[in-house]
Length: 286
Length: 322
Ligand SMILES: Cc1ncc(C[n+]2csc(CCOP(=O)(O)OP(=O)(O)O)c2C)c(N)n1
Image (cartoon, rainbow over all chains, first blue to last red):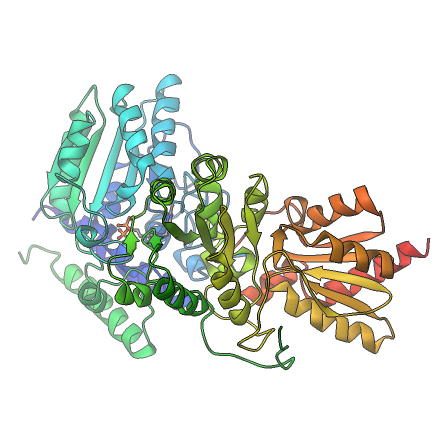
């Protein structure tokens, strides 16, 4: 394993642990939907994205938009670990007057590029940001996380047709295909016909499958390919696991987890252990 | 007829179950009633309905506009659809479908918007609606309801079976303060005069009815006698009751879990200014966005407590005296 991948895996494990700490500060939340994107966030903030924590609104930055805005805590973990703010300051999730609501809000949190929470809206906003940057000669990329349940929304497909029509090749959508939404599995609640791959392709997007969407090396390769694409936006179909790394949530698959104290203890210990394991691999054990 | 609950009564049920209780009975009685949800069945216990009527409960996924349009099409075939999502999406997101495919088309669909105003609490700004009822008030024939508690949610849901127009009803999802005992009955379009006083009238709806009653009792302790109206129906508004009490007492205070500039406060203001101007004070959200927090702190922050109502009554009475 390359040193970089080792680093990214360590960062992903840190994001998982910090995400749990942030959600634990409130007591319950969208653990599943945060954990499924932790690895992709690690690759973006650990390697791929261009950003400056000291200047979060810098014009020549890459953008990261959580169209599935309920995964806020995972983004706060990544931003905090990268120095946008002390990560502990996010241990006030949803508190009165807190700068860290469950759903991302650009007016509250440094590093949050766009406000989301009403599913479907973030991908349109992201397309607008990509177009706006291009119009101003800024070569930044806009990365947007979209849920596979969220993809029920008509707006996702309105954005998809717009982005392809305007050849927004600096828009890269990371589709979190964890197979679950709020009321159950995507196949039970609202299935996607021939699948999200076929749908995005039909809408004129370049589509890349990431067989293991929780594997940093695979995600990184896919993102590199996406950035080599010109003339169309790219969708990465990340086949992920809702709750990845947190056994209790992986098993239950619930959307909004309300763990009891005992379960919190188990989950936090598991995340700490996994972080220690990844760190232990450093120095070429593998 | 209704029975008031004891002032400090608590109730551990979740308010959304009142909707389910009523719907299970309605769907038993009327085979034309269907329920459509938008990936939020788990949030209001719709699995109860789904288990009882697997063929007449549909999940449209996270696609509210389509859910509303589909409901309108079903209504055109003679069915009576109920559609549920969070209040934010049930109003802002599907306004055009509600307006045109249901309202203008005269096709009855009953829209249920959960987590109104501060009851969205920790779900925060993006999920907190203070304008949902106001949005439905812009649709000429929409019936608009803001029930106070379990008993009233149950009773009004049952009454919707006879409403052949578009309607919007708010649904408190979880905890609630009981105002009424179970078995209380209410008529759509008829306000409830809960207390009759001489010095001012407090007109409240939804979670604010409880606060209005508390304010009335505090005022009584100060020797001020206030009427309290539960105005669970915003449209059709019980104009006669508002005017009668406003004329009798000489000043009014409205109290709502909503923006006053597009809510109960403005509906009552419009009526009074046209028919019988009296001093009016309005309690509710004054042009602010939502934010995350516990409901009790939000109530204080948006100045919606019983104490705020008391202060507003003092102000209204002072203005009356010149
Ligand atoms: C427009 C809109 N409708 C409904 C919701 C409520 N909601 C929040 S998350 C969610 C399920 C999301 O599923 P998915 O996009 O697959 O996210 P993930 O499973 O990755 O967490 C729902 C229905 C919302 N936030 N916005």
